[in-house]
Image 1: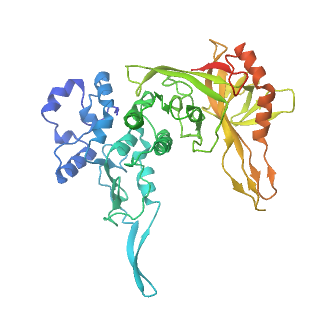
Image 2: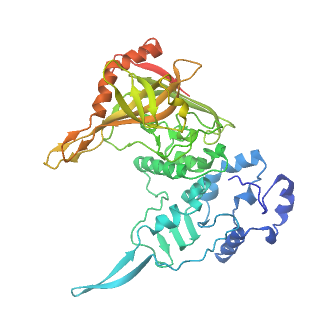
Image 3: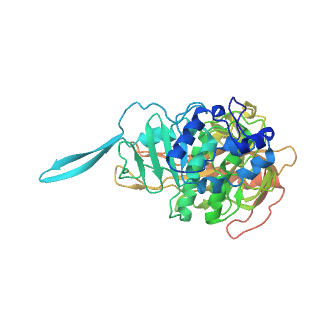
Amino acid sequence: MRWNADDFAMLLKENVDALSIAVPEQALPRTFSDAIEITRTLGIDYIWIDSLCIIQDDEDDWRRETAIMEHIYGGSYVNLAASSATSVHGGCWVSNNETHNAFRTKVKVGDDELVREIRDDAFYDRAVWDSHLATRAWALQEKLLSPRNLHLGDRGAIWECRSTIANEDLPDGFTQNLGSGLLRKTRSLQYLQQWWADVVRLFTKADLTYARDKLPALSGIARHVHSQKGGQYLAGLWRDERIEAQLCWRVDEPRLRPTMWRAPSWSWASVDGPVSYAPTQSGICEDEYAHVVDARVTPLAGDVFSELTGGVLHISCAGFLRGHVVDCDNVIVSGDDETFHCPVFLDTLDESYLSPDITVYLLPLIGGKQGSIVRRDGGQFEPKLILGMVLRATRDNPREFRRIGAFRCEQAQVLETSVENDLYHGFTQRLERYGKEVGRLLCASPVQETEHCSETFGITIV
């Protein structure tokens, strides 16, 4: 983690020798002093505090230490989380409001006397995920990589490990898993895929002091996942896990476009704001309209999990639709028939796209069934959807694009009237009518023929 200059001791090039001998206690902020006291009470001889263990003004040392965060936190005994402290001066011991979150009581049912657990199921989320600490992106991997966490904040002390969550009300632990997010010991590929999507959602909700840390702040978790399953890591996405579905991510609360480049446009790491992944469960959206044929990223210092200087996708697709953005939620699709509005999710708040003179392209990636609904009349309804990216051509190459958003056209149903919303069919019909025509205009000629499609077109996304 990088720290801003503040009025507390931190490791710098100029004081490495001095702090290697001793760190003056009076120079330590309250949170650090409390953490040291807790560590001593636990009988542990060593403590890792990043601002005292990473040379803050040495980029080489910062990169070396960032590269081993998986082992630093994963190999720790316990992670101390000052959940409610708003600065290093806030301390670990925040006064408790004495609100009880759970208790056990005896209940008599007939002749039987049972013990029942009465609890606030949302207390963990409020104490941990809604805490001030959770707003700091770097803190997520500290929590998720550590085998144990001791959360200290305005809701008291909470103990968390891979088998138990306990607090001062129920020191023996809660009887149900409250959803801590720690990696389970049993780690199937399907579990890791869903876990990564949850990690991205939590990580992108949090903030970074330095925008360029977007990928480094997640690198420890990424390395750990890679050690479990392998695969090519691409700026926050995984090549081996149906990357076409991952490319359909969307920003739920768009913000201004970052001024500094840090990831290719097809990666969620290129923008700010909470990100949601598309559904990837088996049986959902199994139709494919495009295929990633090649992908690569260029690391700044040889580490693909950390800072990047470039990245590119080469995609083979069945066709495109073109149109223009009319507002932050809609693209009008070009065609000879009636106007068709496609719902979109722009990645950033950029009004320069809102012009009929600027052409954008809708690239469908995946689609198909999204589940099953039972109608009130007892009938079965299987709504479909199609997902993809909104692209804009670069100035350098007519076949080279940047992502500016995502789209989602679904077939919904109003249960009371049994009227189906036809966005899905509206899109697929226009894709069949105009998709290859637009593809030929963009790509001059098809790149290949397959058994599933007579023409496919090759494009590059940067």
